[in-house]
Structure formats: structure tokens, C-alpha cells
Amino acid sequence: MTDCKMLPCRRLVALFFAAAAPFSAAPASSPLSDTGQTAHYTRTFGEDSDYATPAPAYVDNGDGTVTDRVSGLIWQQVDGGEMTWEKARTYASNLTLAGRHDWRLPNSLELFSILNHEMNRPAMDTTFFPRTDAEYWWTDATRADEPSKVWAVNAGGGIGAHPRRETLSAGGDQRFHVRCVRGASPFASGPRLTDRGDGTVADAATGLIWQKVPETRGATWEQALHYCASLSLAGQNDWRLPNIKELRSLSDDRRVNPSFDRALFPDAAVDFYWSSTTQWRHPERAWYVDFTTGLVTYADKPEKLFVFAVRGGNAVPSAIRNKLAPDPALLRTPRGPRPGEERGERPRPPPPRK
Image (cartoon, rainbow, N blue to C red; front, top):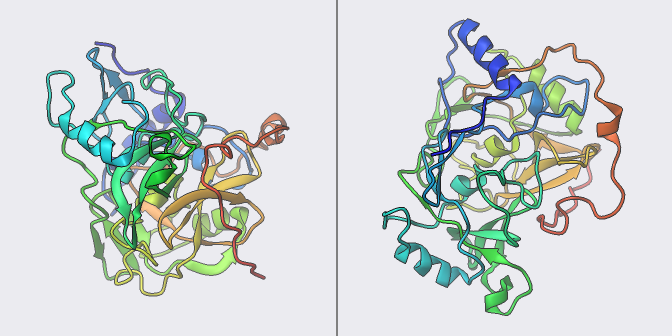
């Protein structure tokens, strides 16, 4: 059995802060692993790499499976190849691997949780999940209002609902593969939300606490970072802009228009919301969630999107607030096709805002 990698420096810093931190009203842990983003793209405090959440920790079990130590899930190491969604469901139910027969298609948050947003094509740690020619991987969920579309995670780092016929085996021109999972899901079938009665909403599935009334006047990415870092709410001032995995966890595949729970967030607009995660090797863009359906894609940072602030999930600062300027080399946009566009979700232009 091959053990997991050594913890990166930012995670060691996180553990130090966690040990020294005073008691907080936030939940103690989260089954969501970090996005993997370590690069700094701005002097404004609050971007993805300024906070450390549970670091990805995989174990190669030596039997064709990989254990995610953060979520507890066990994954098929080499994906099962290209096939239709219908065949993928049959494949999963019939799979025998590592002496186990309880394999299944993952739900969208399970599959999205193993992405690494400091990698691309695939946005996945190929030390543990060998590279294939997959452009997408099927989940078990169809779109709530359009069952002919299935949620699929793409190799560029996004997630969207796609027509079943898009894959090669169904006559399309894309490669949708299957990667099976087993184990009790820490995410269940969606968020488990509770109104805390103090302007916040807690999610028992992820350990995160959300701002109940988000900022809906429209903010650039830099403004969104500043807004969250400056927020004082419910007696707490450790609010932050969520990373893309955290933000997507608020979306429920059983809902549409909006994909968040309207009863818990009655004043939230059905719109695009920034994450703190920059697109890999594309420094002028950041990932966002369209809460019409739960689509994850990207936008240019000067665009004005909406903002959900979050706290908890065992996130601790891994950078000081008075940051140094980022490495200029990281801010140069590479020429040629933008990474992720060939296998990413096609973004809709954000609505114009003043």
C-alpha cells in the first residue's frame, strides 16, 4: 500500500493556527478537501490560497482503488472508459473491484470533491488517478427540470448538466467516462441546512456556515474578496469568499431556479456568485456558480457578480492579511487556447450591472 503524500507547507501552517486558535462557534471539520490552489494572484486578502481547508489526502490501496482520507470515500483508480450514461449505471452496479460489489456512480458533489483546481486536463491528481482521454465523467444525477441532461464533471475543472447524447457512444463527439465510488457519502443527497436565527445558515453536510442574505449589488472579484474579509456578522469576523468546492456544495441537484434552498435563503437572487478560486494558469478569471442550475464555470474578474460569504469548515488563514505582491510571472496570460476552454463549461455572459 502506498501512503499519501506529505502535507504541503500551507497545511502545516493551517494545523499550527488551528491548534492556537480560540474556540469558534463554527463546526470543527468538513468532508470537503481543499481545491489544491496555492498560487497567489492578488494582494487583496481572501483569495483561495489565503486559506487552508483540509488538504487532499489520498491513499493508493494497491488494488485498483484510491481512498480519499478527507471524505472517507473509496474510488475506482482508473476510470472505466467512455460509455453512455445508461451503460455507466449498469457498469457501476455490476462492477467487482478489490473484492467489493457495492460500487455506484458518484453524486455530483462527491465527484467534484476530488478535482484539483491547480491542475488541468485533467483537473485531478494524476499521481493517484491516472490520465485517460476522458473529457467528462458521469454522475448519478439528472437535471431536476430536464432529465434528458445528466450532471457531469469535466476535465477542465467545471461541472454542468449535459445531454445524454453528447458522448461518443450515443452518437456525439465528446468523451464521457465513468469513475465509480463506494462508501457512505458524507454529503448525502444534498445540503442539510439549518437557519441559526442570527442571519446565518449552517450546513451539517459540510460544516460550513453561510451568510443568509448575500451581497447582491454586484461586485468585481477583488471587491468580493474585500467584502467578505471585512464582514462582521453573527458576532464573527472570520468570514471569507468560499472556494469553488465550498460554493458548489450549496447547490442541490434536486432543485432548479434556484438550485439553493429558497426557504433558507429567501432574499438571495438567482444569479452568478463568485468563488475565491482563480482559473488555473488564467489569472484574470475566477470560477463561479450559476445558482439557476448549479453550473460551475468562469468569468473575467472585473465582471460584477454576487457574493455569498462563508465561514467554518475548518478553514484557517495560511497567509497574512498584509500580503506581498504576487509573482508577476503568474499574472501573465498564456497565448493560445485558454486552459479549460476545450473541456470546460461554456459560460453565459454575466448580466450587465453598474
